[in-house]
Picture 1: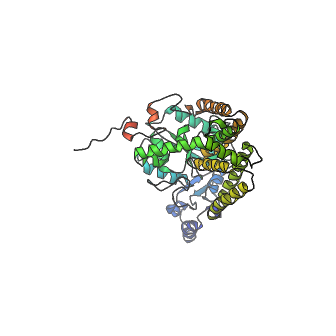
Picture 2 (picture 1 turned 90 degrees about the horizontal axis):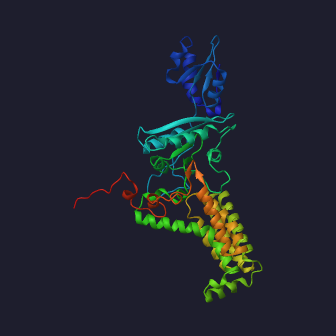
Length: 433
């Protein structure tokens, strides 16, 4: 008898290499027939069930004390393509897929070194899945590797279907709004972190690699930062950090200014803003909340709809609703400008998780600004910085290299210095005159 699951088994392989040879040569030994397939002999039925669920077929025969496990899994692999959310202008244009073996192959193509080590684990009691821990033996800290391994082994769930499960169950502070693991679908980005002493976690069936330990400033760095000239990269990275400040402080600053501190505005600008506010029946906080809610609705609608329709909804919906809501006198033109600049600034953040965290922080800061003005903003920022300084990622300070302060690390934080000045083991190449 031959058992297999048709949906995950290569039936043509079974027909060609099992059924046809056996029907023609029933007198031969089975080991002579299965020369073109990898197989093993098992006696435990539980082992056979697991093999069956992984695409193998089981062969039982009268009088046998065990059964054969023939490796016949079907292969439905997605082609290797560039991740949609992490496109680069210059550099490799390939990305991870749902097969872990392919992902490990892509990493080893980037790092052809015997120091690249991989440890395997199995998570999930009901639906077991394989997890791999990838690191460079000569650069990664043994303490860091042991911490990551211990936290993975402590995961006790019936199933682990995505890397989000591992991320939530291994981070230091699950109640923090800030992401504490870096996720990427790019092999080159993962390889760069591995060479710097970081550790990567891969889950079979998920195209995302988790990188630990994370730092706050690592979410504002992209692979393109190291593919372009250093002074151009420094300018772009500085603009990106300015966009971060604008993304969660601009609405709060506007609310505090028009509500409590309008005397800091130039006289002409003061009359312009006050003129646009005279027709609005709501306070600035309600204006901002209303527009932010509309923006979030349009953003979610654009993500859930097909790509072509989603872009149309985002552009047309924003123009139509924005113009209509101003003409109706519900919000002012200046608030439209503030929210639009805030939205554009949030798009500059490369990490979607960090962008979501920054969008969330806007709301408590706006409430603090409407109640206490600039003092409320200062108090809110103080709490945020205290939290960032106390936060850790796998035992490492989250706000490094600012807290604790390391001058060498500042060369690749707000701006990027030349690579030969960042890497201690790299010197500037000499040129012949």
